[in-house]
Length: 82
Length: 273
Image 1 (tube, rainbow over the protein chains, first blue to last red):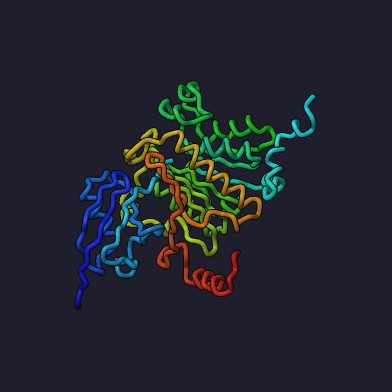
Image 2 (cartoon, helix red, strand yellow):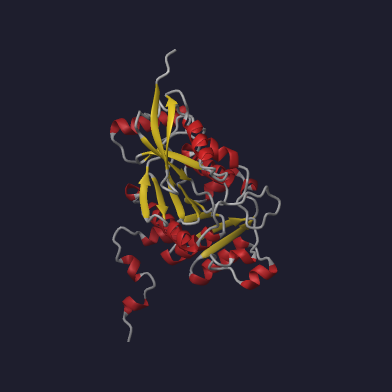
């Protein structure tokens, strides 16, 4: 099986910082959220990843989510307090 | 001498042509959670004309609630008043025509049929597990569910319209699952304490609750065509307010195959129901 590796950027919505990540299409959105949250030492909590105006489904692979090379995704906290 | 216009409490509301005040007066609203968000939502519901409101919450008032909860007083904190009762009373103080009912107890202990007695469900909750519970019960009862969430200066509102709209759970992922059973508790009693990243903040609370009740007004007035279809996201630090799309997740347990079939048929036929 050939896995296509590509680079993309993830932006930290809270700070504006970005990180470049090298992934393959079979990586999941969940994995990417965890990697980015770990990289920025985020507090434990709920986060979502979005591409443009669309929230990406956690269990999807990047390929199925329509993520492509050079995309800029954004990691945003999902506020759960009330 | 004031004229008739000045004597009518809802004169200004009547000037908004799409508002159906009679329907709003009759709408049975279930408000789950009577914390910071519940206080503000309760206030907006009462002032907007909602008269049949049931408030559910198991918690009691503590001193640290007082910087963001309109209806709570020092006396409530001293005596440990039940939040649901204080908010229900506050709604009736604002609106003498309102019949607000308090249910003091755990959301999870309510029977599934409980939701059948309401027209709209508002989630003013402080944890993911309760959101999942309220969302699924409202969805399966066929009731619109409006959920608000906030953290510091960040807020979110999502409107879930069964049978074919996406629901709260569609937008969740593994990070939600990890904290699903940890309450963002004010009192820390009987729960696994999960420290929020930031405490609730009143200006964000006010904005989120206003959007929630505005969407409630649209649904009660029969104007689902105007309702927020996606998630409203607000970041008060960056001065950003925008809509984000949460696609329906075919693996979400709230959307069995027959529902997805209905959804596809609606899309095919161009229905906007």
